Image (tube, rainbow, N blue to C red; front, side):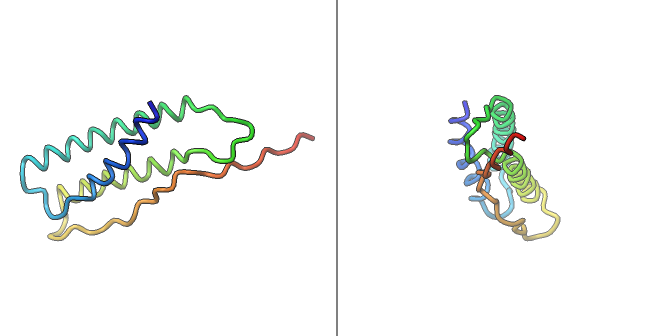
Length: 111
């Protein structure tokens, strides 16, 4: 299940930022609605992966779930700004971080 998540996430990000201009057509609005539903699915899969993860005592890295959640929210906000712009030209909300690997701090020695 997490493998599917990691395949879908970059695709959705590319789809979200590929389109330019205002979403004038009903077809485009429908497609963006589907992207939003897929973002819901990604969030649900990420939550399940976070709950199911197992911490290995010697693992050096772990997945940064909070950062992924922030990026998904940024995508949602960008889509919402595109679909309902507050001004004539959409603005760039900034870049996604995209790096979801955290260094795991070394375990503290037992006293």
